[in-house]
Length: 180
Image (tube, rainbow, N blue to C red; front, side, top):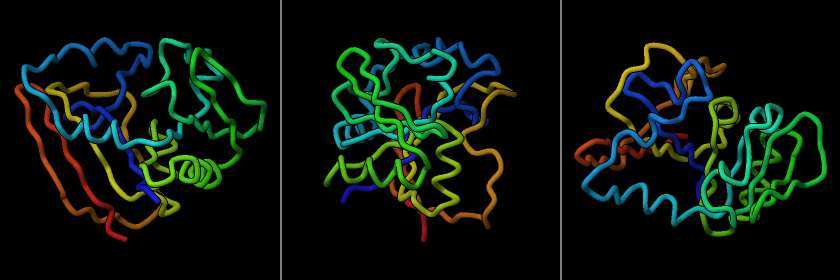
């Protein structure tokens, strides 16, 4: 089976969204004249995605805002199981429980990796010991406040092993293995 990754883009001070979570313009504000091989390999190696339900509850997921490739199986962690939802070419399966959603995604991904998207699901996956690696893309900006990737964990500190760093003219990408 593939790995379970927390894959995120963040500011230097650890925020994955500004205080107003509707502002995502900053993600396209730093074009690079160099390729980020780590980002490309990560995306090509994905077989499924796990994400939280908040953006569905707030009607922020549309056919234009689907995480990654619309053809990837998408698993949404929810408290209230519901029928699958089709948006454009993507089908979202709603699964009750983080562990159950990650296991379903791993099965669907086969030998490929699973990306966890969003801070709450990332934190819960870490606390459950289900995360194998982090792939982080750090943008040259400081928000000062907003939505942190990792806020408060209910477990002991988690050790990481640095596997890779790639720096382009604008973005630094890092890959870490979770020591288990």
